[in-house]
Length: 77
Image (tube, rainbow, N blue to C red; front, side, top):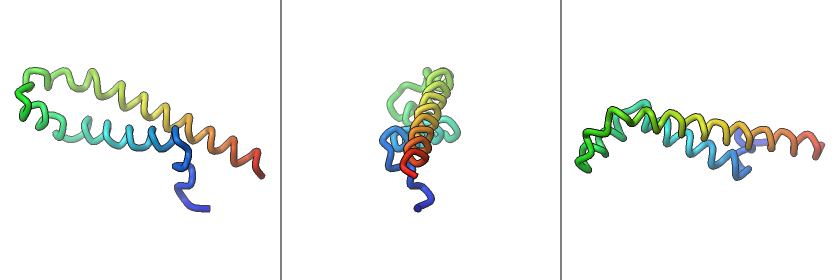
């Protein structure tokens, strides 16, 4: 079995990539640079109010996908 075999599950895949993008936007200045380039620098103070809940939602989706993978793996054996 592959190490990341659970990423074949659709929920786990969406959760993984969504978490990755949200973490990059949250923990690095990528999103701030984009806002400045678009002329929306005044809204940079409010980014964490949006990005952190999105990060937690995608983490929950990833957890749900992993639980589905574990349940399917147990019932198939």
